Image 1 (cartoon, rainbow, N blue to C red):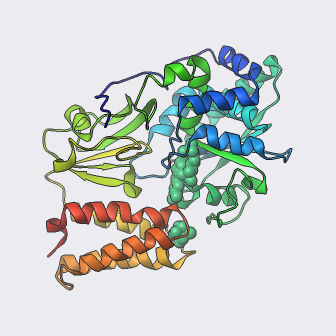
Image 2: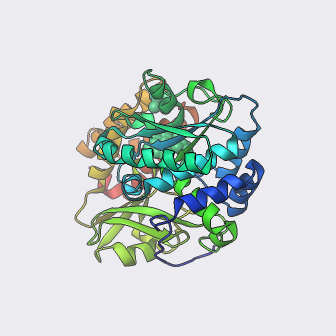
Length: 386
Ligand SMILES: Cc1cc2nc3c(=O)[nH]c(=O)nc-3n(C[C@H](O)[C@H](O)[C@H](O)COP(=O)(O)O)c2cc1C
Ligand code: SF4
């Protein structure tokens, strides 16, 4: 596997002349923009890693004259705080990325779905949005963005639940298909992209796909913004080239006693010390929407797991049985094993339940509970049992 080492870069937060980049983007045809995204190999930064060029291509192919770009700024994954920083520092690039995406798919309207807890950013964002609208007006391009507020539910970051929430309904995931590219917000063709994906798209228009592919690996092109927290002397936001190992990451951010790194938040994977050197951070190894939590030997991995299961039990929307009941049973199960009320072999049954949830749950929330569960129980069994 390709190993790029740990390299800090400064592209996402780089100050740019939006007017110049947008004027360049608006001169390109829809096909040209989409081709540039496909050539760049950009994969979505919200976690799932779907190729952005493909998403835009599918939405562009829809004949409906009313289409939408939705910017997912719900940022609910535990340990992620990079979209807040991006919106705070370079919202001109978020708005610009939405307009470029709009040109690519043929949408005149964009909606930013902003995490409820970030409402304090709104006054500043409204001022910046006003100058953005003025600027694209000057360029002679018709595109309008509005903001809608989330209200603290993790599930509302899931794309179809987010659409329901924007439409004023209870935030519950829809059945798929149809996918958002065919029927998204207001049941119109929609491309929904993470904040960072849209900024990266803007950067690709500015510097070109050829420049972008110099960063990262074949499967994980470019750089990404990481939210670093936990047992680290240097918590914060860092933009790093994709393709480093967990060991290289720990060498930079660890406190000398790191025993595990949770990559990708509660829905991600726990990498234990013995696997640091062989695990690449990227789509070919452990993918991440940006959350990187370090744990040192003072931490109980039982407590870490309990915390995640408690979170999922609370945040499950309750719509489907595998997730609603599965989350509760995983939580109750590890509690019983820890108290000695169930044999340690009961963990094998719980592992099977996590596998079933992956197959049978309706949406990504229930499908990904097993990631943390299996990687923590599998690697730290001695800390879970009585
Ligand atoms: C429970 C759940 C929560 C999610 N929360 C977020 C979120 O806060 N921000 C985000 O960008 N994507 C989130 N996603 C992923 C979105 O559904 C979607 O894949 C993403 O916005 C697509 O953007 P991208 O292609 O640019 O990554 C979540 C998914 C699930 C299942
Ligand atoms: S998997 Fe969980 S969050 Fe998703 S629809 Fe089912 S109950 Fe709701």
